Length: 398
Figure (cartoon, helix red, strand yellow):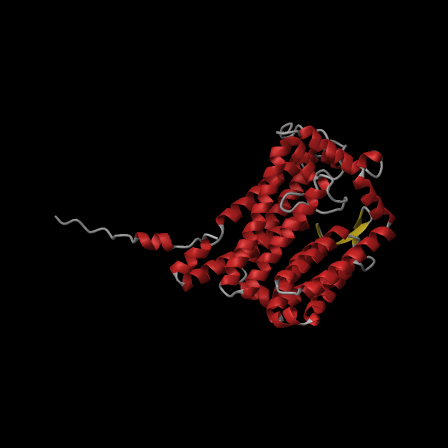
């Protein structure tokens, strides 16, 4: 009686097999999304029951946005990288057209004095959020098409900044100072990493800085935000109310926090607790340890984005490299600004915490950005595999 010989597996082939994408990055982002849902529920239930008659009003809407964001992220991942590179200009111009529609009377929807949304049935579209992603994709493509002009001629630097400046001006008219600052800083960072010489970059920082300071000086409510953040307890019941309540939340949290759901500041003391000031709720309920873990998660996401960009650059894929760097700059910068505002490091401005804060447009765009980042990583890994096991494995460890 003969025994059939079993096929012998090649262990070397298993070792050389590359994963489809960065699993650690995906797990970290999914953890942030899940933690964000829990914290939005914790921060919004008392407010939702008071204003909407049900404690789960914001939780349900955030869950729907989360599902839409995951669908958007999958779609962004499924699109070939070449599609993003070819259509970056059209996406940017579509975003600018949407920003124009927001400013048309009768079309733009206003909330709390800000006109930032276009009503689309049950969903309100916020073009400024999508514009951050479109700007990253457009600038990444521009740096590839005009690499020589960007590095050697001032015109290669000025041309994209004119378009981005026009888009930023329309966002400021909504008004949305925080989104404008993040988008401009992200674009300038991408241009700097793309080879812009130091002189025009310094001049642009001076011009933009002067413009931002002028906007603060001529706008009473912006000036009030700046002065109140310097000493919020000087007027804790008026201009410094929001920041002083946020700092009290961090103080109550101490080292390990008061426990999930046991926070006090979110109960009608801290305005916008489930949106712009969700980090303060996290600080109160999970303490310094929880806040540091939150910061570490965003540092990890930003580091992985730049690591993916470095591998793409080494393999001769400049669009992938610039897009990954832009996404890393954007997410890291927005997280820094939001947490900085919560702890009193920066003046108060309306800017969500990526992946966590309540806000359907912000959540969807952040998921789409991660989907594109994972697509870049998958494309790079495929190129590494085709280039040979030694070269591929070398950069997987980066």
